Image (tube, rainbow, N blue to C red; front, side, top):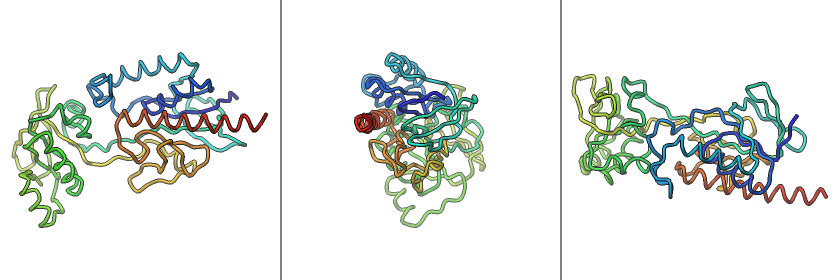
Length: 301
């Protein structure tokens, strides 16, 4: 069975960010990636210095090319299970393979909850978004909608006023709003539609309207979803990490968790979900892991 210094589960910006630093530290690293990155539908990544607007697939292509220069192994395969074995870990891969590692980095991310509404998938990443910080600039001065439960949607709608003064909340059903909530929306001129959504419409490339069950057609050029997210993997739970109420895994900025030897970075951690932050978390975890491995190496001599 092949043994690595570090097994990295997930080959997005966080996982590759960790792999780059560890590879440069001459560590034997395996990155396993199951594909289907969270931001794949996006036209471009924003807020990443030097790469603003770069398509997600191109960032990953360049990232893979860079880490391979430092001897990092990348396999396009899902990691089905990871368990403790001796002083390290043993992992089962979906292709039947099995590997050992001294440390494990989980960069498995989160999955967005996407409502089952006609047109939602069609315009996902082309008018339907999740992150105002990531995509708000591209929607500036356009009519914007927010879909989600009232308690989430109100906060997002207030934030989106930075980019547009025409914001409407769609609760896709009766909203559990207090009188104070309604006064807040009225004060900031945020619209509210409680009728269920029938479909999203556009020209096939750009979103233009939200059609409601009561036959109202509401012009919107962008929709931001506040419908939640769930963990993409149960490996943090299997390995004994603490899971927060929102589904993220409790971890320090350098990725350390309550489970010794297990590091969690990227969107699965409880911090800001930006590509730049994910990459930084991966790098910070790599520095920490290399220091731990160095201490272990010196102690064994």
